[in-house]
Amino acid sequence: RCQDLMGHTGSVSKVLASADGRIAISAAYDKTLRVWSLSGVSELNVLRGHAAPVLQLAWAAHVLASADRDGAVVAWDVESGAPSTLGHHRGHATALAAAEGGPSSGLGANALLSGGQDGVARLWDLRVSGGDGAQQRVHVGAV
Image 1: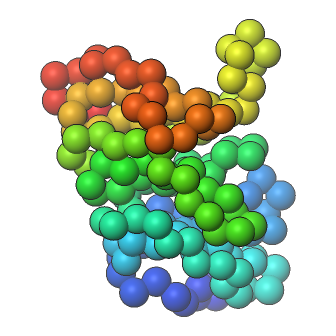
Image 2: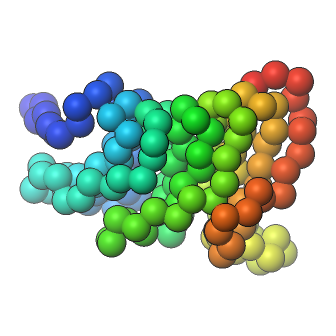
Image 3: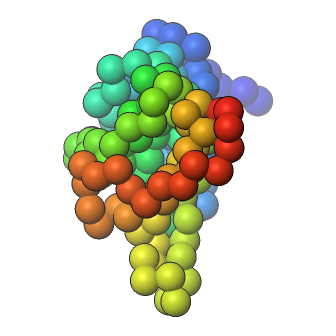
């Protein structure tokens, strides 16, 4: 049996489910993320904070983040829907991953990795917002 989760007004680019299977997050070209109840098959929240289509989505432990076509990388409070812009890549953000650092990393579960068309891979410390993150140009082209 299939049930449609209706709400986005543009193409859906990413969908992720929680580890416990209770909720899902979708990202789309309508510049929003949507939080869905999988048990009630209903929309719980609409997260707005991007100025461009949302292309990337990462979710692990306590980290929910998204990245868009303009290069913005945003962390989210899922319950309140509050966005926190971490910074930007030049060009599209092309890759995003939540990193669950071990005790020796010093970051714990507060790390996010992003890559962009600018050829830069960035490590973001989610305890700090508005910076450029630790960055390393590791590629000549897009990541």
